[in-house]
Length: 115
Image (cartoon, rainbow, N blue to C red; front, side):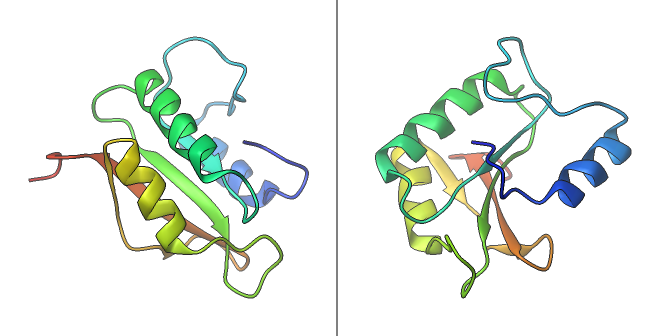
């Protein structure tokens, strides 16, 4: 769910930390982790579907994050929207964390993981 308003500094830092280039949603092989950029106004059902699609591509222990603009920023999505979509997709959503000045991140885990 990349768009021209994603935070390129976050992408760059992830690439530096991992030593790998990030791929987009058209990549069709297994991945080590997934970042879904989500904005208010995007379809919640589509978010659930995207979470399911991403989780099938990520290995058992790979991280899956949903990044949303922070409250007060254009496109800010409520954390309840992400939590509801995650639940529909069979995932638990953690408490949002600040990942940059403009973006929050929510880590998702399959039900039962992390116990």
